[in-house]
Length: 181
Image (tube, rainbow, N blue to C red; front, side):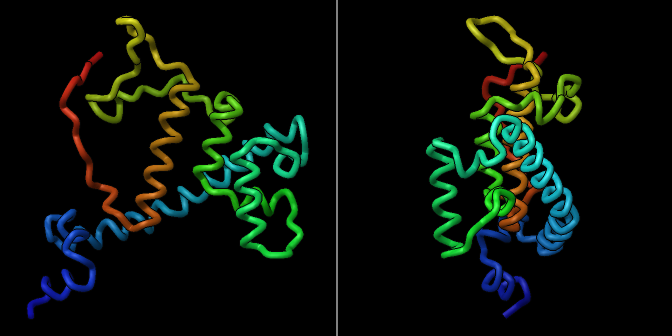
C-alpha cells in the first residue's frame, strides 16, 4: 500500500480530492487555517462586544430579558448545557455562536454601529465583484449596511470552513449573469 492510499484511508478521498490529491496542499491549508484562526477568533470577540455594547444601551440584561425567539432559544440551549449553573450576562454572551451574533446584528439593525465599510471597494479583491445591486433595473450602490452584511457573511463562511478544517483556498466561480461595473 503506498502513502497516497494510506492518506486516502486516513483523511478520506473526498477531502484529498479537494486538493487534487496533493497532500502538500492539504497541509499548506492546515497551516493557513492555523495562522488565521486567532484573527478570526479576535474578530468574533470584537463583534460580540460591540453588539453587547450597543444592545446594553437600552437594557444591561438584554439576553435574560429578551422576548426574541432566537435569543430565548439560544439562552435555553446554553442553560441546558450548563445544567444548574447561574450564568452572568457575559457568560451567556460568550457562549453564543457567531451565527447568533450575526443574526442579532442584522435583526437589531446595528450594522452601522458595528463597522464602517463605506470606503471598501469589493472590486479591489476580485474583478468580478460588484459594488452595486440592481433594483427595478437600476444600479444602486451598496450602502454600509449591505457591505457589513456581505462581510459578516464572508466572515461566518470563512470561520466555519476554517474551524472544520475545510479547504479555504478552494473557490467556485459562477460565470452566469456576471455584471461588471
